[in-house]
Length: 371
Image (cartoon, rainbow, N blue to C red):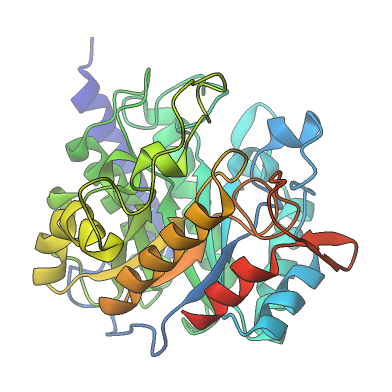
């Protein structure tokens, strides 16, 4: 019987040969041979959930359309933002029961989002929130991206398909984000080491087709800390931090709606300056990545607003954005509309402005625009 490592190694060889053939037999680029590109402006914007989760869409989640409405890009342009992260569910893009067969009609919906980004001056970042064999949210995938060869090959194949499809679109308009929030989620058996194997394979598949494409990789533990096994990053890639600290505020009563404890204050008890708390509890964890020159971007930040007082939320949000600005990090709010967004949130303790039929939290929007 093959060992797990042996099976994955065989899949790595298969993927490497396949992408080499797709590129006319050229070898996969070595680290440091890609073009030196980094954003010339700070990315600032939102996560758009149009194709976020097929299961939730089928259950009636109104944020998930099965496509990306152009008006969302138009609104971001009008407000002065320049970035949209698209967390995708791979199931939208492959035939049911066959991970290796992309669906052209579905890929065209992604083409539309890329086109809207160009039209409205919004950089688009494509990211798999759910990949074959892994998602940090339910439902559970039937196999593991990190232990089984079938999802591993399907994942790299999807990135090869996208790299080929969007080859020639400049980095100013489009980047890739490999897979959302690697973490020790059961039953996938994820570790920093086997995540690094998967990330390098996907990066090699992309670079074999489109050597200069800018690619992001999420941090370990749901984006909370660097993956040291991937450092240092080359000049055409970076690492995404997800800013949800302290969890006691950002996810207050999310997992226990009947939690009797009141929402913690911001800044935390014992601190008079929230930014300094974030420096100690967020930035210091990322100091090794900062020191080795890795491009860092806050691909997600936000706070579930259903139970957090509006004043507490705005104070936390401003300090988190100030932290990002202090270090030159761009950011993308999770999300535009819904429980973490600025449109149609569930809170009842603030005034909303009617905005094209949506309830807009104008105070939160203007705070975001200032940073």
